[in-house]
Image 1 (cartoon, rainbow, N blue to C red):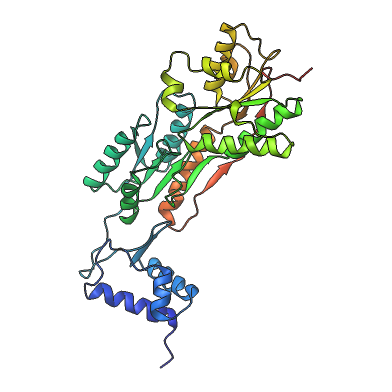
Image 2 (cartoon, rainbow, N blue to C red; image 1 turned 90 degrees about the horizontal axis):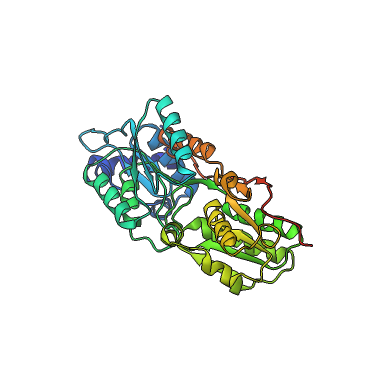
Amino acid sequence: MGKISKYQLVMDWIHEQIDTGVLHNGEKLETEAQLSARFGFSRQTIRQALGELEKEGTISRVQGSGSYVRGNPAGETAAPLSRSVSILSSYTDSYIFPQILQAMVEVLQEEGYSTRILFTNNRRQTEKEILTNLLRSASRDPIIAEPVTSALPNLNAPLYRELLSRGIPVLFFNTWYPELDIPHVSLDDRAAGRMVTEHLISLGHRRIGCLMKNDDGQGILRYRGYMEALSDAGIGLDESIVCWIDSTGLKHSLNPCEWVLNRLQDCTGIVCYNDEAAYLLTQACARRKIKVPDQLSLVSIDNSRLTQLNQVPLTSAAHPMGKLGEKAARNLLEMIRHPGFDANYEFAPSLEVRSSAARVP
């Protein structure tokens, strides 16, 4: 009889743990590192054993979470994933979301999946209630979710981890929670912030202010791109001309940009978080009879319909919108078919130059 291979020994041991009831359906296995230490085998050997167990349907491997038992001693298998996808989105009325959500739904429907869209209204409590209901109902829906206020501490992370532990594929879109190893599909926001800042620098601007959102990951990354562009151009960062606003302030304040102009009055150009912020800032400029771009240049991010509706057409880094929704849906489908699939993807921005930014005289 030939010698039993090392990876087969690992497989046999895991089978025994399941057959004797030590491991139950849905229970998480030891990590690769723990199994490697237990057997004294290399991580590659452990990985090979887990791969074979996955092929035969004994376990499922969830990216960013670990390996889980699919069958129990009675030979039962875990409930299959449903043919419905739950999509968690923050808003319905924002200018980028209709295109994103429509593209997701179209791709998923083409592949035979129904969808249900659940709106968090960018509120953590609502996100918590939705995730809790999904867990309580034992939903087997794969999930595409937009994180809520992703730059702030998140108490809902354990709920996402519980979904992963049940073998539910989860994909984030637009942004992600840094503390969770869940793949995301988004714009490269850091590159977008850098791109629009570099455009102002190329027009001779040196006193460049910044208006950013402080409660989502996109704002933090766009700000990082702004800082890097200034640094590369030899322009020192002046935090006195950096203005932060949260989602509620941007959407619901009567005059959210009036104080920005007070603070940035000696700037020649301003990098805006998105087209909505630039649109509101343009209106504030008009009320103060500040001419855009003659007296103040503005650049933004998203390249939405607001760029054309603005009093002065906005120069803006393009958000992929529909393409992002399509990519997110297709990557989720790949995660369903191949649990180890790396679904991370960031779109490179492109710049649409219009008349809101002018060269410094």
